[in-house]
Amino acid sequence: MVAGRRRPRRARNDPAQYDDLAAEWWPTHGRFAALRWLAEARGRLIPDPPEPGAALLDLACGAGLLSLALTGRLAGWRHVGVDLSSPALRQAAGHGVTAIQADVLRLPFRDRQFPCVVAGELFEHLEDLDAACAAIARVLAPGGTLVIDTLADTLFCRVALVGVAERLPGGPPPRIHDPRLLVAPDRLARALGGCGIEMTVVGGLRPSLVDYARWLARRADSVRMLPTGSTAGVYQAVGTRIETGRDDL
Image (cartoon, rainbow, N blue to C red; front, side, top):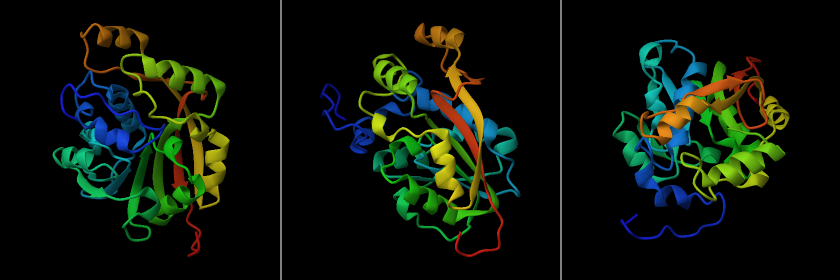
């Protein structure tokens, strides 16, 4: 977006917003700062690669923020990212991501190709949850791991994490979420279970208030996302592709 030009007002959940905000992905105090914090927290759930160079599929990868987490024990993963936004994918490629423009519902990969698939802040943007789960199940290898974080379908989430957080520094940009698409853990578990992925809820996440205060004061570049027992807001889950021997899952 050209400096000084106002961002166009778009419908809630319009993917074009990510093109409008392409310059906001990597600045530590940009509009996507919270996505950076979540990407760092996501790494705690990613398993070690089964072998060096094994491919990890990052759905809705944006500008490749998950690369922040793929260090240390996770450095052996080959980071493959899929997104709709060309400007974001160009940035992801600059951070070592094999960046591919594609729709989650039409993934251009072989069946059972990936031992790990990451779906961070994805499910709350999908109009067809069941179709997306089926597409993910198709490319996830038997016994493979699906790493999830998303927004719960609760009054708290609609008010606090959509209505209020959109107005706070570090919160999601205005209109980036559509409250009608938020996903309850039991609903997501049923949709994945119908495709052969057994899901376990890990728990919720909340920002460290101390870190957030330091971040607001420009004394910190990131905010730790802390585990919480409540799944009323952002929650994490892990799915495992069931090994059935059947070809129809």
